[in-house]
Length: 132
Image (cartoon, rainbow, N blue to C red; front, side, top):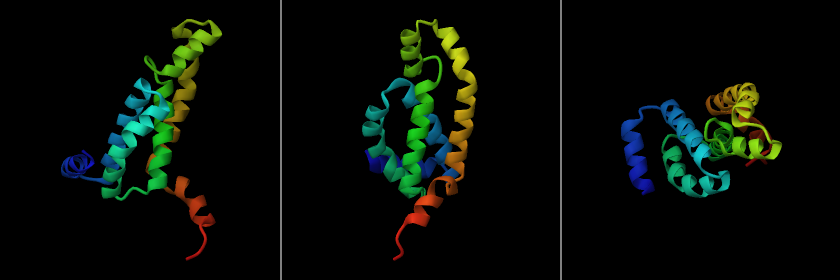
């Protein structure tokens, strides 16, 4: 299955940036519908070979995964954190959604920065990497 995904993606998506945009959209949708840990177990084995084919660093991909899945976890109308917050605080869903929208926008900007500026995620690990 991963080999078929690599063939399809490299034939369909023409650049690394298009691939990253597709990954963002896919992971936000997956984050809306699945628990983060389950999504990682299911989706990572399918996307890692495709990301390697496009030259995406594995650490960068991992951070993209976590950021997008968390954004999906908060995205209305099906984000699971919204339902948990509504239940826990005894507030109706529309009120919870309105309260989270500003932070959702900030998180979306953060996800885009993380995705398209790999130096944000890779500079510190590269500094700490032992020489050789």
